[in-house]
Length: 140
Ligand SMILES: [Zn+2]
Image (cartoon, rainbow, N blue to C red; front, side, top):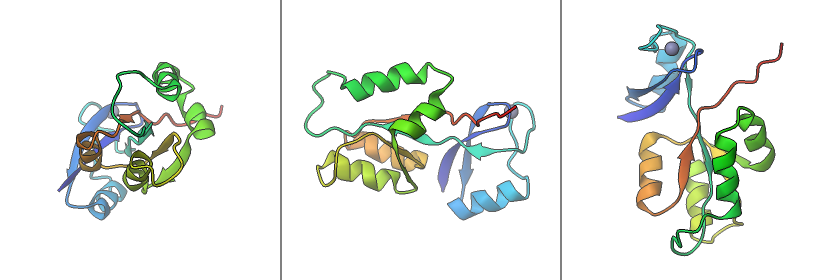
């Protein structure tokens, strides 16, 4: 079983449990995934982002990137900021966060998809991840 943090069209967030990622997609397509707050079936995964993986121990000192992240989280234009400043690694998020943490690749802010289980594992390894609701762009 895996769990996803899901978000409906009205920005309600809730946790959904599925047998697999495919199972989630199948149920979502059949509109079997329903928001418990409003009954909306326009469900999407809330993406895991942004994450800042830093090498070495946790000094308790927030890096400039982390400070930016906190500031940005309060902003409505969060999505645009993340897309512009963070590297989208999509479903490779957990793997890439690990590689950054262990110094195997360039240190940079990244964002992408992660399951709740993957996020928990990253946190347990001391890798900083944050979860933000992914605001859809409205163009009207
Ligand atoms: Zn809802």
